Image 1 (cartoon, one colour):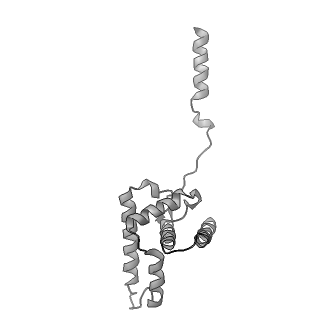
Image 2 (image 1 turned 90 degrees about the horizontal axis):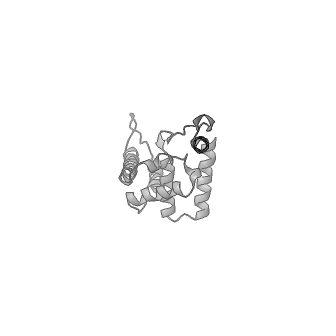
Image 3 (image 1 turned 90 degrees about the vertical axis):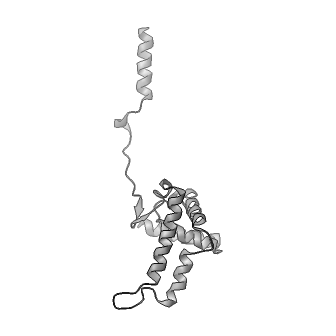
Length: 147
């Protein structure tokens, strides 16, 4: 009986986690440049994700129609179409949010990239960009993020 008890204690000591022997984990930022990134994105509900897309797109529209205090347009007319094409498509906000989900799920190395870039990726993909164009785009973002 004593041998069985000692064996049980020994087994439990081997099985139980020992926090002092575990490697320290580094906290990872849930935002990049004050934007949610792929680390925080999955923690939001589908409704919150679609609402984020709506809010971001609304901010773009508001900025495009704004002027500086001296009356100059923030975005000149020549740039507006290009900006619109970066963030708007024929997809619904829920569909865009689902595309952002896939952007982060399919490539864990995208986690540090901010959601605004993921939105751009989804928009470009919906607009017919080729996979090689999308890969080059994401590669440039990863490179910039790593510096």
